[in-house]
Image (cartoon, rainbow, N blue to C red; front, side, top):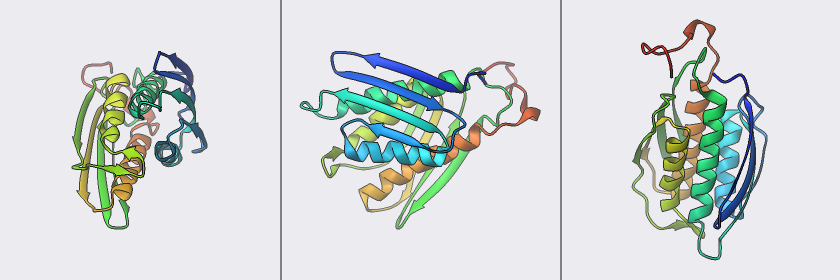
Length: 195
């Protein structure tokens, strides 16, 4: 694991301007302003349950839609998590969690493998308020590719889209928190000798 677990990053394109800061072993405090209310709520839930301190501001081309904002924040978050975690050493490496919200249950399984791969089994369509639910997959794809990590997110049950999506972000948080749990006995947790 990197010695520096506090990471700051900016990203500026013609579509988005992002400034972010992350403390891997924080208290779950967050200050999020992306201009997309539902997405802010999901990032706050992730930080809270991963026990990560997270600050994100994004000015995006929301006159088009929220796609670039959500994807680019996922890119930046993935990059910061990668800088904080790799090379993996003295942590658990694997994590999983199931989070329930009323009728919904979502499972997340992950491997801090330094290889980007996403399995996303959330059969959703439509929107939550003005938020296009297709962007949930875009966010997790951006995180998994840019950290990189192996990430599986599966809906076990549920009807309410808000509940299902929020359970997904919280399950990712719980699984991630467990994967970065310090374990001095682990050394480099790979037969390859490096991750």
